[in-house]
Length: 577
Image (cartoon, rainbow, N blue to C red; front, side):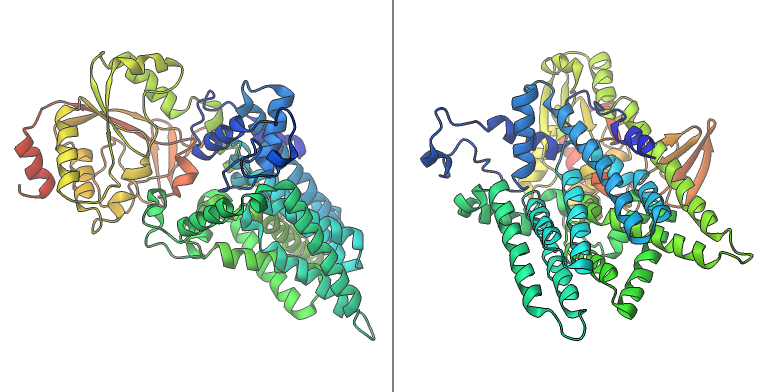
């Protein structure tokens, strides 16, 4: 099982040829590159905001930055991104092993193996393992912290309490979204304290809680010292992240979440893309069963797990920004809940004619999830669409041509043929800009000059048209461009969908936008399956931008065929004709 999990996570780690197409990974490596040991060592400098060890970047915690800094000192700066991705994959694999231990201790070896198997083939952890970001570390630390707190609730072990506190503090020093661990920490000691008979152990419970909380604070301070030393910058960063999570209009990349329903959106994305429908349904049923068991019997195990799962989901699920990686810390517990339910049903059916139900349910959940994971992992073994599109541009577009690209997206051409980028004149267009005459003039200037229009990904043409009231000009532009009415014709399409044999799982960013489809095979809605040249295309509808844009975007390149006058372009864009 671990070999399968490792194969899925370590396959194709150099999927973008080191071009760092994931923006968070790129930013993290930039910050790490600026970290330096003071020479000579000066405590007055180290303990000040001016320290060269101060990352001055608090969108994420400092612990993963210092770990990468240590790897750079040990291995060198060359290809550090690969070391970061290998670390991410290794941490994800360690979470699979940890979940086996948790499940085995709670319900026996069968539950442990099944829970770990579910997690091993879950697509969301597999995807995050290929990025040198903080998510795999966060998931592992949160999982181990809750495991330690379960032991606290069962035995009142002070050692487990200190371990749970330290792990919670390290998780907070990885990402502040781990804050709901505080609820689990309190619940663990509270459950242990009140379950004693005949008298509750309130004094020892409060002392244990205080020691665990102190351990968390110390661990956080050690792993992220400049949150305290450079406190003003830290609080400012927290405010910015909070504004982004709440949907600040100044953050363009959260526009895709306008009009989405909290909680329901995350559940649909988990079912369709992050886990797959069979595993997601089993997981939700398992959480419901675990919640009922916890409410009915108030067993320490269920109470502590639920004290982590529900507060985290209710807090993070309410965010306006609903990136699916935000749900990653819950995935191990979703897999465990599914496994516990399946094992419970199997045990109850023993000795009856329904004795097959346990293995049958496990197979029904596991088999399609494995197929999905294998299909998804294939995208890391094929050339990235931006590399393919860059090679096409360098090969087909003559020197001196003007390329129109979109601000906030990947500039193309990129990649090994990057030397060819100097051959072209590049014009950048900000479709997120406020609507008005200035934006219209900029758009007209760009269209007049451009020989090619490059939509590197669905980041903007999949999100902006969903807000025609806010972006009427941008909506008209995309409608006319995709309908090939601006004098440009679609000449190149690059995509890389999850596929396994003839099975192809297609996500459609144009679904629900009201825009025309420029593709020959069409843009199908969710739930449609079709055969094309020996392939079974299963259309699953629109997906979260962060699921596809980084590692398998769809790139569209248009070539000018019929130059239109400025007056004609303006009439088309403003609806005058």
